[in-house]
Each structure stands twice: as C-alpha cells, then as structure tokens.
Amino acid sequence: MHISIKSHIIMLLVVFTLMPILLLKIVAYPRIHSDLENVIMDNLEVIGHKQAELVSTWMRERMKDVIVIAANPFMSKSANITKEDENYNDTVQYLEKVAIEYGYKGAFVSDKRGVVKVATSEEGVGRDISKTAFFKNAIQGKTFATSIVPSKVSLINEFEEKEVGVPTMFISTPLKDKDDVIVGTVTLRVHVGILSNLMQSYKFGDTGETYLVNKEGYMLTESRFSKHLKKIGKVKTRSALEMQLLNPETGKLTAGVRQCIAGESGSDAKGYKDYGGVSVLGVWQWLPEYNWGVITEIDKNEAYGAAYNLKNIVIALLLAIAFPILLVAYLVGGRFSRPILELTAITKKMASGDLSQSLDVKKMNKPLISDEIGELALSFNTMSQTLGKKMKETAESEEHYRELFNSLRAGIYQCEPGVEGKFTWVNNAAAEIFGYSSPEEMVGTKVKDIYVDQGDRKRLVDKLEKEGVWKDFVSYCKKKDGEKFYTERTSNMVHNADGKPTLIQGMIRDITERKEQEDAQKKPATKKRQS
Image 1 (cartoon, one colour):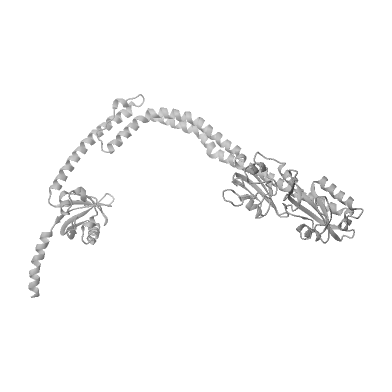
Image 2: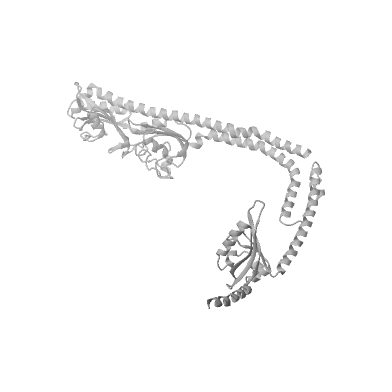
C-alpha cells in the first residue's frame, strides 16, 4: 500500500504542477495568438486604407491644380497663341512657375486640333498630341488622368540625368474661352517620384511597404527595397515599371496582386509569397477611377513576432517547470519501476522458450518495496520452476508420440485448411509415400499439388467444412517425381474455440497394389458379360 500511495503522489505532483502551464499552452495561447493576429491585421488594414485614401486625395489635388490653371482667364487665349504674340513669354513663364511651385515635370497647352501651342522647356511646342488618351478625353470636356507610363521624351530622372522612359503620367482638362466653348486643353506632366516618396513617408516596421500596381501586375511606384532589388539583379534602374510582381516559386503574379487587379479589395492574414519569395501579410484596395491597386504588405515573421515570442515563452516556461518535476518523478519512480522492468525482461526470455530464468530475491528486497516485490519474486520463481517441469514433461511426451507416428507404416499429416493450404507436419511414412527424402522437405509444399485432379482437394475441403470428417477417401495422386498412384485417407477438420478451422489432419496409405488387383478382377467379369 505504501508503494501505491507513493506512486499516486508522484503522478499528482506532475499533473497538478504542469496542468496550469498546459492549460495556458492549449487554451489561453491560441486565444491570445488569435487576438494578436486580429489586432495586427486591423492595424495593417487601417494603414492600407489610409495609403489608398492618400493616393486618391493626392490625385484629386492634381486634378484640381489643372482645373485651376485652365480656369485662369489669362490662359483662355493661349490655345491659339504663337511665339510672335506679346503674351507668349508671359504664358511660358506662368506654366514654368506652376510646374516648379507645385512639383510638376512640365505643363503645356494645345489647341482643339491637338497641336501643342505653348509649353515649358521640356515639352516641345508644335508636337501633335491628338491621338493621346489624355487629349481625347479633355477635348470632350473631361478632366482625365492617365496611368503611369514610361516617358517618350527625355526627362531629368531621380539621378539628375536625362533619360527616356522615366515613369510619368499626364493630367489634362479642357480649356475654354469666355463663352465656355472648348478651344483646347491644358495638360500637366506629373512627377511620379513625388507619389513614391509620399507612399514611403509612412513607415511601419522594418519590412512594411505600400506600392501601386497596374492591371498588368507591374509596380508603378518605387519599392522601399529598390537598392536591394538592384543589388540582386531583379531591376536595372528602378522598380517602377520594371518590376512585375511575380511569386519566384510559381512564376505567377503574387496572390495579393492577382486578387487586387481583379478588382477585389481584401486582405490575407495567413500569408502568401511576395515578389521576393518572402511570406507576407497583405491588404489591398483597387481604385477603379485610376485602374490602380494600392497594396500594403509586411513580412509575416515581423508582423507576428509578438505572437511567436509568446509561444516561445510558453514553451520555455513549460520546459523550465516540467524538467525538474519530471526529473524528480523519474528518480523516485525508477526505484519502484526497476524491479518490474527486470521481471518483464525475464518474462520475455521465458516467453521465447528459456524457462531457466529466475529472479534474484535478495536484489528485490529494497527499502519501501521489499514486501510486495519480494513476494512477487518468490511466486514468480515458483511458477517458473513448475512451468519448466511441465514443459519438459510435455516435450518428452511429444517426442514419444512423434517417434511412435514416425514408426507407423501409414502416412500421418497435418496441413492448413483451405484449397491453397500447405503441409505443416508429416511423418516419415507420409514423406516416403510421396517420394520426399525427409518430412522437412515435404513441409511447406501445397497440398493440392499431390493430386492428379486438383479438384479432389476442393471436394475434400468442402466436405470437411460441412461434415468435419471423411473416411476412406480414394484419390489419384502423384509423387514428387511425377509418378502416379492411388491413395486412401481418412481426414478430419480441427476447429478452435470460436469454431474457426485451424488445420486438417489425417492418415493416408498407398493402395495402388490393391487398386490394380481390383481392376484385374473386374476385367474378366466385363469380358464375360460382353460375350
């Protein structure tokens, strides 16, 4: 009883010590982790929506700028102005002042045919813009913004160098005279770099970024990590208009970009691979008025860092408390379990056939455990001796009967039930009848192979399954070398306690000589009847 109480104390000590930590890990941690994820995604969505609103507000201001310029009475005559007009230089200076003060790359005015009449220094006077989308929309009375596209003329880039292909966009509006008749258009060339800087001005974390994407999945503003992208060779000059946002593992658009350009606004809290192959959380919003998508992303590891740290803290706490408790339980429990393990090991050896095993009773007589374990050891040794004696008697009896069976002239056999059954034991006579050199050679062969007509095996099995025994069954058989002969046997089916067939056993004799005599006696009688 003392051992039983001790065991319960150890178990209760482990359970009640670890239970609060396990409950924290199993119940509290998933809930805390889920709440943290919700807070993180809520914050990310707020940032994404603010960035989308920032882009929309910035674009509305650009459209307001061009409308204000076109509404200036001074500009109404510029649609048909020439270099010879006295107001020409004043108009150019006005456009250049607007471009500098409001951060535009250039400004120009065209007549209603689409010919540029007056422009800042970087825009060519006389250029035909009649086929451009921004002119066509403006001349029809709309204020229109193009997408971000590579420039067709040489512009000063972010490196203070002239370059063709710098990301740019145009905002245009109709130019009307005093009678409110459209006489031309006013167009501003937007400095896209300002939009990129604006989107990067709000930083969140070490890996968070927001960028614009077009319908084809190309980045329209600069990535926060452009230097790194150039270093690894993903872009040559800039990420805007060069970087198509593909998942490196699949070669397809990233999950966030794919859903965004499909016109969907949403988020992903589980994570997906971004254009750098990093698992990120994302929020996206499609702006149909500009055909742009605003995507905000942050590395999953950074975003969920607090949740992951909490998990590590819980695991560390669990290990820190569990280790000493388990160590004590192991040391104390080992004292009680060691004799049982020794008993188990000896029992396994006995099960494999070694009945000479016994327990050292003196070794079992340890403090606290001497009573029960000592008595168990004595009982076990007594059982082992008795079992060994009985096994010895059984082996001697079995050997006696096997010698008796082997001395018989008749063949005795045992085989598996079923048509495909094999011989499991035969005596010397059975092996000799079928031409085998020893019983061992015959054991393992299929029973049906001894029949000339293998259907005899099925008939025998069927009858045994129905009636349990078949006496004096005559069949035409063949020996190992193919020699054919007649046999007569008596067989019975043996069942286990559940009534399931376990083996067929029987006695078999070679009756070829008797069969030939019977056939010889039948022939004269047959001839006499025929005559």
